[in-house]
Length: 209
Image (cartoon, rainbow, N blue to C red; front, side):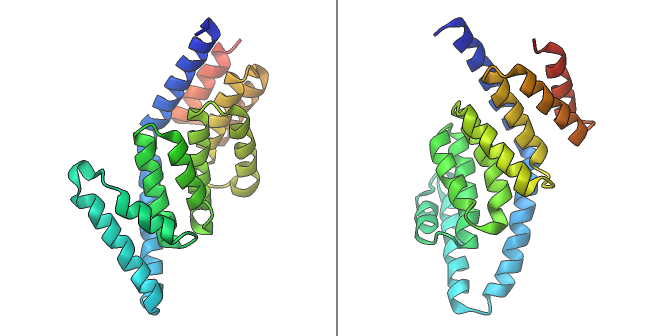
């Protein structure tokens, strides 16, 4: 591995670690949104047997995960998700599976589930924000930049937008586009003037050559 490759890998490792360290507040938001959607949809679905059965099957699949050793048996949930694509319960399950495979560093499989979750409108912003992170972990910098630009156009007011911008800046930096990266770091500070993201961006602007 060349010196540049080692440096790039070091930045990626730090970026992935940073994102993991900051996933908890994001995931809390994800869980709250998912819970709200589940409650709303649960009330609506009780009016229709087909929808009610769908939610029952989803919760049975979740129960199988909870009952498995170390909560690692996702086979029932994967089967449910794959058999009920483009439904809200399956999208919720796909996000859960994406997080599971992310934790196992199987970023490609996580990506597949994030893409599936994004097909359902209610989950599109969260799933696409997670997809950007999965692409960065796979060193797919051009795709990160493209997805981030698309996110800005369609979900620029979403609370995950700052995190998406951070991933874009890192992708630009790792691609050798330092000046462009600095501009995005400035945008992050404008978007979120205080907090860890702003401090991280300020440090990058000072240290990038």
